[in-house]
Length: 449
Ligand SMILES: Cc1cc2nc3c(=O)[nH]c(=O)nc-3n(C[C@H](O)[C@H](O)[C@H](O)COP(=O)(O)OP(=O)(O)OC[C@H]3O[C@@H](n4cnc5c(N)ncnc54)[C@H](O)[C@@H]3O)c2cc1C
Image 1 (cartoon, rainbow, N blue to C red):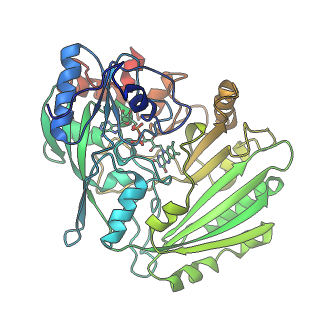
Image 2 (image 1 turned 90 degrees about the vertical axis):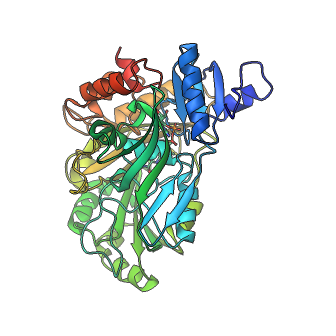
Image 3 (image 1 turned 60 degrees about the vertical axis):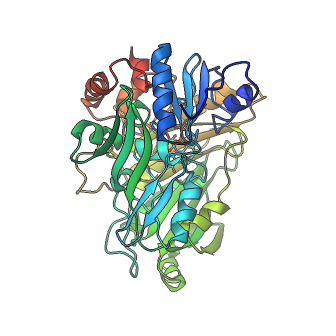
């Protein structure tokens, strides 16, 4: 064993627990021990330690699970933040990424090598949890021939995974790819916190260019939501390389909707060409702001605020209709928990046809997430979390589908099934019995017991 576990009472134990969650909202819990792994051998040791102790092993890469799946009272906590391998083979268009890399660190390392990858929208989201959940990152959901030489990324980030090194709960170290184990390969791309092993490294396909990025932002009064929805529908199909993000800020008074078009292009000239197609939005907006160009997606991520300091919760539903239909379904005249709380609507990833065997497929046209922010000292957590459910209640119809990376699965374990296609939970349970028969690796499937 290269690393000794930290135990309750050891110097530094409380501090090591405190930094496991990246947001202030994670439930408080005291693990039985913490392993800060530096390599695969440490991960192997942690799995063996948890098994010998008869405890579950929770896994933390970037700590952005809002449901706090990386921390459980009495479990052994495995912290992977030091697993930050970043090795690029530009000739072959592949990279090896450690799960402990943040989105910002992965984007920066890849940009330095002249490459890019659809990392998460928020700078500190961990590559581990992000890729296992499916990964709705930058440069997804686009299709078509591309602007200039830029080829858009097909589908979600997990579609770019070619292989992974995994220590499964039974203590075996495996290389998982399309040939080695069809069930683990399927689960690797979408099981999220139901994955029955610890990923120590991903091999992914990268784009061998690093686009420049420009943004245009329109601020529209919510009273014009229907008109805005129609204008957004009329912009579809978007030019390749352009991504729309719509942030609704419901309120009894002064509700606003912000539309952000982020454009990934080969040259600054191409950025300008794309902006000229959005006059219909200019007419609706009180304010139009251009920002950038950013030299790369990494430079954009540096400009995006991180959410670590405050309490935050999210809930997610896939919308199945047009922009207009989804905007109609979000109640705009209801006060939200705080100024920063928003409902974020973005295109669902298109899904890559050459990767049919992945668990993750966005079953909708638009992803709709409610993000609640509140002061952790205010005692308003319940109301804030309740707001995320209320505001999405009308989205997704009578049998809503959700995203394992963002849905609030703690309040109602039935939502775990809503995160996966029919039959997937049963297949995951069978897979776990095979590769983790003692159920060492903590899983959201435990909530279904
Ligand atoms: C501010 C914010 C922004 C977000 N933006 C996006 C976004 O743009 N796109 C998107 O798709 N999602 C987004 N998410 C959701 C996020 O991708 C998921 O919550 C993801 O699981 C976080 O990964 P993590 O490694 O940071 O979290 P962690 O809490 O460390 O991991 C979550 C769970 O995933 C599993 N896991 C993580 N790493 C491993 C590993 N190496 N091996 C085995 N299991 C592992 C564990 O069960 C773990 O408990 C966002 C979340 C937040 C809080």
